[in-house]
Image (cartoon, rainbow, N blue to C red; front, side, top):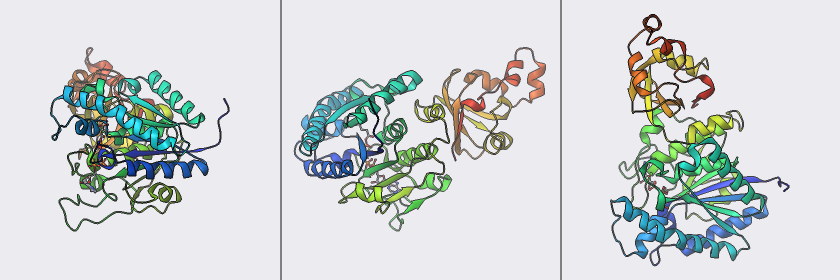
Amino acid sequence: MQRRARRVLVVKIGSSTLAGPDDGIDRRFLDALADQVARLRDSGWATVVVSSGAIACGLVRLGMAERPADLPSLQAAASVGQPAFAAAYGEAFAARGLTTSLVLLTRHDTAERSTYLHARDALMRLLDLGVVPIVNGNDTVSVEQIRFGDNDTLGALVACLTQASLCVILSDINGFYDANPRECSDARLMRRVERIDQQVIDAAGAAGTGLGTGGMVTKVRAARALGLAGIPLVVCQGREPDALARAVRGDHAGTLFASPRRPGEVSPRKLWIALGDSARGAVTVDEGARRAIQAQGGSLLCVGVTQVEGGFERGDVIDVRDPSGFLFARGLAGFNADEVALACGRTRDELAANRLLRELAERALIHRDNLVVFA
Ligand SMILES: Nc1ncnc2c1ncn2[C@@H]1O[C@H](COP(=O)(O)OP(=O)(O)O)[C@@H](O)[C@H]1O
Ligand SMILES: N[C@@H](CCC(=O)OP(=O)(O)O)C(=O)O
């Protein structure tokens, strides 16, 4: 099949934006969204919608006023809500001549590189066919270990998979503030964020409503991952008229997280390391190791590690923190957590002199080919 020249837009919609009073779905919002997607299609944009709302919609339909704490109830609510909201999307989009499809993913589907690539191929083919995929986590069969947990991360993953030109998060708030506006009355809206540093991360708080799960924390995390892929992110108010057209034109009313890198600068495999699976642990490194990785593009050696968290195995994805605790890289571990803990506090010579520990001195904990450094 011939691939049309197109730009891909990934739009993530939060539960509180999609939620409506009667049957759990705000149909006026969906109609306005479908209008916007149809207009964008006419100007050469293919859209993927990453939509939350299965659980919120299911709870309304089951007459549950409170969000239950136990997983089976949430899975049951998702099972009730998911088909209902998929049907509502289908109706609203069909009325504008658009075909929708449903793509439900778990971490299982992206943690292995081969299944990750299958998910990518399916999404690309749907776009080739002119379909608007509606993507969500498969919450009915997801247990904690394989849940995406928040759809901001899933949105970033889908944007990377589809090589999107832009990702837009339609939220219940008009953008990212320099402090959580629900806690700080003089918080200021940031129109553009160039670099995600500790200050930005500290400003991002949790969700303000019972419906949203991620809050601003997961949006900033998504922006960081998208930054690696060279994909800018706009966070804006979901109910603002023409939010998508404005974001595409570059005159959004929310916050633009600019991308510090060009598309293609970071290899697809490294993007998968950054996003495909959740981290199974973390290591904190000393200043010398930070510099070797960040400034010189080197591998991470065990001798640079000062602290180990989590029970990761060889081949697992782990986070790498600098001495202040700032997460600045991520990679595939070449040793398990116990092995790395043995090396902590020892010099390279000490390790090399010990027959049992020699391997820890000779091989990298994370080889540079398996290491992704956030900008
Ligand atoms: N620095 C911040 N700027 C803006 N919103 C913030 C910030 N820190 C925390 N929040 C909270 O994050 C919420 C948006 O996240 P969330 O409730 O998960 O929405 P959605 O369902 O749209 O994903 C805001 O309504 C606000 O309460
Ligand atoms: N997959 C879940 C939503 C998870 C989620 O990220 O919600 P939100 O913070 O509202 O975007 C659902 O459909 O209910």
